[in-house]
Image 1 (spheres, rainbow, N blue to C red):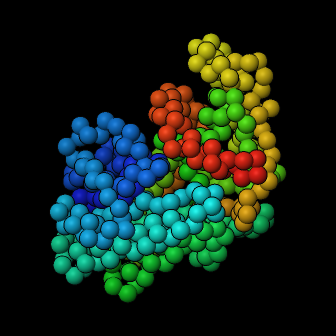
Image 2 (image 1 turned 135 degrees about the horizontal axis):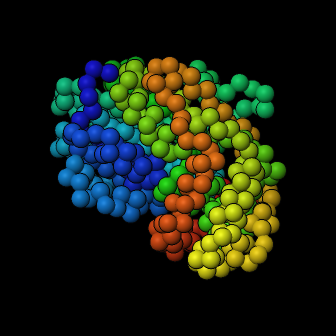
Length: 375
């Protein structure tokens, strides 16, 4: 890459990974501006960005990535030379229940961004150099067998859910705009993220919060589905490296080097919360329904439920290309990362209490059954 990102637009910057990246980028850089562009759907939360309004380099704009004219205006008004595209519908269960939103946001929305970028950057030449970075997922590659080699950048795409199919489609569009029009692009496909600000429908925050509230811990099938877990801070650093060192038109897999089963994650979190609360009378008082407060074990809350349709059995990431070309290496040990995540959720109860009392609670009421649990 022959230019330094200056004015960076971060789509979906009020979401989980996006908000972490906004904070990471502002802490890492001292020049230019960060413009967050987010529609504030259910998983977009301006509280994820609380405190950043004091930074003169930070701008928040509410808008829909499917509105091409609004995107083009944003790019030109703020002289944006770099887009980091996080905005996406990303929950597999929701994609099974309602795939239309995933096609609209992930495919149509990405295409809208690409068209606006082409018009501004290539046709009108509003900036001397540019980069469109697309954040994707390992789920586009489908499912691995227990003895299969991890996914690498040349692995064939074989998505198995409406979510992963929509992300695969957006990946292909990004590639096409590079190959056809010469747009300067890069793509990262990451494994399962966890850490601060993750919306409490995903496995790790859902499990932590349900343990604290004494609620059942739904586990799909036998729980032996395997995922590679990536701390969001490591993911943010990998994206920064891709912007600084990634080759135009190239793709990089980003893994956490922490492959384990879902049931192991749940049992580990059960033991961790029990241990953490054991000697803390204040936390037991704050969470009186928790197993630790009631003198039982959190693992007793585990409930195995019917597996979801098309559930991929195993993901694993080979990130040697990112290590070799970007200098990427995950630094967060899974055990330490889970402990730090628990501590964040304990310290930020007001954040997730507000979500549980909002539309998330209505969604749970509508969709949560023993046969169709949250992931």
